[in-house]
Image (cartoon, rainbow, N blue to C red):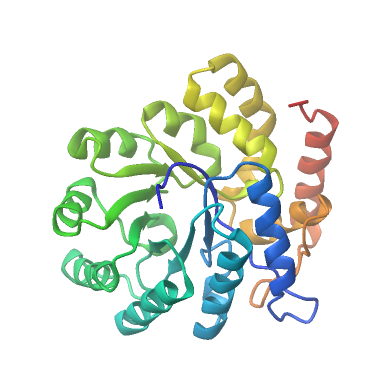
Length: 297
């Protein structure tokens, strides 16, 4: 797992009755790969991991690994209520053929650094798989500061990357200044992509890529290559869609857009509900405006 380029945080495919749809998931993986993504991450927050059982998470991972067929590596998002469950899930991911792990803090409990270090250290040490630490303090109420990331990197050789979703683009520069090239740094918020790449990020764990893979890859490549004019033009068109990733109902919003593109169902699991009212009107307006000006690639 190289942790560079555009790596989708995959939505999880469900049937109309809410059951996991392995065939639809495989189709979605293949479509993403055909459009140039460099890896796949399943069972992140976009994948509604909190609503999946332990066995379902491994079933999702196995489906993605089989669909990828060695063309790109697959990582499993590891989040659980307990450290033991997280460790067991990491080991299950290795047996399922995953090449990497996206390491999240535990659900519900927001701990101090001593406890958090023990949790993620146990998880990273559970396998030899390449690990990416996921820092998202707005969502998980735990902030991995650059100095703390450096401690983990010094302790664990298989910690190879950080998904930075704090919303503070200065974190990319701070991590790079502290760690040099020791870790790959990836943008975790869709609407901070160009800023993050210009600050030194080498990859993007992307959300709207689930509906717009070609545009996502084109935007990232333009930003990474230094083609500012092309990157800025694509970004200006894409931003209203990318900002859907920063809203509380981002899972429903992305799945709705994905369905409009003919790539999956809107189906989500409770407590999430299908979009309605102002939320539905907003995403419809954003999508229709984007279609009217969709760039030719």
